[in-house]
Length: 384
Image (cartoon, rainbow, N blue to C red; front, side, top):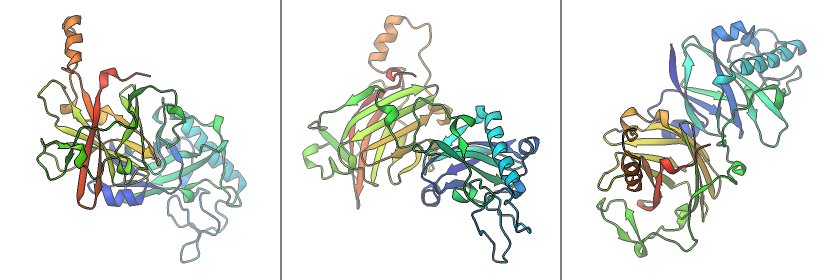
């Protein structure tokens, strides 16, 4: 049996925004962390002794002067623990072996990002490497997990595998598997250059109306009365999208620098027929450089995490995983006995097809304004 653990990669984000989640993983390196989670039995089967990992930084000692294994927090009595070259080499080999053996379970977290995962009941280890774009080698890291993990679990510099003199070890890029995806949420954006646009807006384009918090929900205010239009990233210039399996990837470009108070909102329609209303909202809060994508469902006080995002100054990217959306919001596709002509007609009106209304919103002090940019029909998103 496995239990859910929420991996958040910044303590600030974990403590300030999660609230309802019991556990989080913190990363203090600005790099993608690629990893597998292995149980204690799998670690033992690999012959990997994690009780004395050479992961400590030089002169890492507890108040009593004993060296401490920074991966597990267990005090070690020997002053030479981790200084042996053979032990360091064996640890690096074990990391490579575990990553390759369980490569089908490979996951990654963006720099300072977040994602929900599952932990084995009997404890084990998070085994992975930091993948920095400019490096030709990766930095392996191991974080042991007890059967009763603390509320905040960290992985970072102190969990890097180190050699006999305390320097970080490296592994060749070809020696460990890479997490494969059409694009990777890592705040780099190069992979998006040849991906298709779904929205492209003129610099002078603007919505005719907008909405303001505190006004009647159905009320649309003339854009001339807006105080926040174009500010803080509200003006969307370009949106790219692609679907891979059950994951929707989006990349957006805005005309002005993204404010931490900006929120990109995707109003989910199970059936985009005229007159239907949405019961759920997917929110990409831009408060931090990376973080979770939240699904708010009508009648529920706590959000569901359905993906993650990263952002720069003018660009943002996100992935939304359909399997994390509750089943009651999963739209059924049209029945196969519907005639082709009918299917095309219904598709034209969005009937029977899920869609997202794309909006940006900005809060300044107690004022919040929101601007809608268009409707994205998921069936029309290119697949890769």
